Length: 367
Image 1: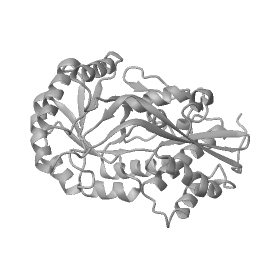
Image 2: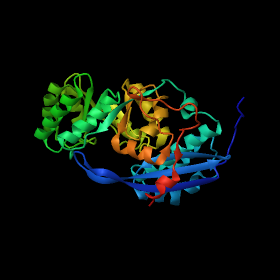
Image 3: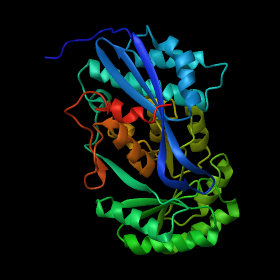
Image 4: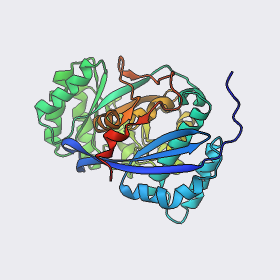
């Protein structure tokens, strides 16, 4: 019989940051990069330690160290919502969106992990499991890839048993159509093809592309226009082919952002990212909104972080198995689950998220 835990004081918080070079330079429709920074938070109390993280800038780590650390230490580890609200209040004059939200996200996910470990439960059990596994889609297909590179990556996911794949578009409309044709050729007709423009197109460009993509059975058109252009997203959603979902939301930092997007009827599928939207607490708020609007939710990136909450929120359709993050999480964490038949299963034999930082492997990337 498990020991009852009523109250546990959080007695320490440690934050670290690591910048990991990409294998090759990468690009999407609006951005180019050659490295990714992960900010990791470890909170301790009651003899246990919880781990959380965000893909963010080093400024996020500094904010956690300078501001959030003093807010969280001394809080009750069994009352995550109380600590979360305290963090929100402490950043009032700094602006919640952006760095503040990502900092809160890293701490909040660590707090949930700690609570589950204190109760000796997998996080999905603490949250309330509703499915055995979280479907994923392979994601990458960067715009600077050659057609051969693109086809090799997409083929690899399909051979792993992943029945849906996503590629980046948005640099050149004509080239995008040619690349999509090459993608469809290699994955066959039985695999769902997703595309992501990262807001690169104008409204009329996006409409023309949506019609052209119908030939290749594109099932998902992410950010055809800027996610700030809710009217434009609604326009594309209304006029896109019936079998093509319009998706956006990855840049949502709080519940108000998601509410505006859903109230505008801007998307068929909302995206939320627990490394940005104020953690698992914020992700669950987004899930509640989706439930209210009868729309599905998709988890953006950070697959190792989303597997437990993705199996606990009934509205979640799938999670993004993003190439960069999969590589990083395998490099610096023990306990990362491998996909089986196109889905990730939470490890029910381990408490919390089941992740452990590989300190020796991570140290060489430390900032």
